[in-house]
Image 1 (tube, protein in one colour):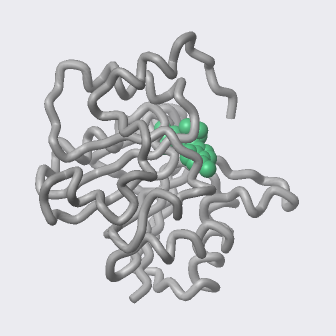
Image 2: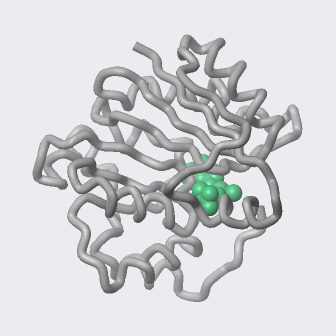
Length: 205
Ligand SMILES: C[S@@+](CC[C@H](N)C(=O)[O-])C[C@H]1O[C@@H](n2cnc3c(N)ncnc32)[C@H](O)[C@@H]1O
């Protein structure tokens, strides 16, 4: 995926009250930051933030954390949030490869929306539904492990179904023509171009 570099993106996002600058300090303590015991759900690869902002506005009794590797897309999220006051949303600029440095047995659900497909076999480990990442996610969850995924990429959809099953997840729901009430930026573009949206919801007890 090509990313547009935004000048001073790091400075712009650092000034936002939604942006947690040193997320590792909150490992195991995110409920203290939110100041409640509500469930915590995270989106990995949050991009410009449309989905996670929509979720947090719709569900005030769930806490949300959007995780994005690069600062440039987060500038858009920060701008969208400029005139909104939401208590149940935080953003972090962090590579999910090191996600176990940030969370410990405190997450209720993970969202993976339009993750980079990494189609080459030699890049399989980079896919956010590869065994390498699923093993990391295991340690984040508080109780049941719930993962919801949406993708335009049919190969990543098929690959992920197999990977979830091989790693002990029960497939609760799949849909290859999924219509969501809260969409992402990429999803909007794919829908506009007539591309079907694939959906997977899995749980591991
Ligand atoms: C194709 S974009 C989708 C963005 C958004 N979820 C959407 O649907 O509009 C994938 C996003 O995931 C981010 N990403 C990829 N690998 C990541 C990782 N290891 N940790 C955090 N973010 C990651 C990318 O920087 C990019 O913003």
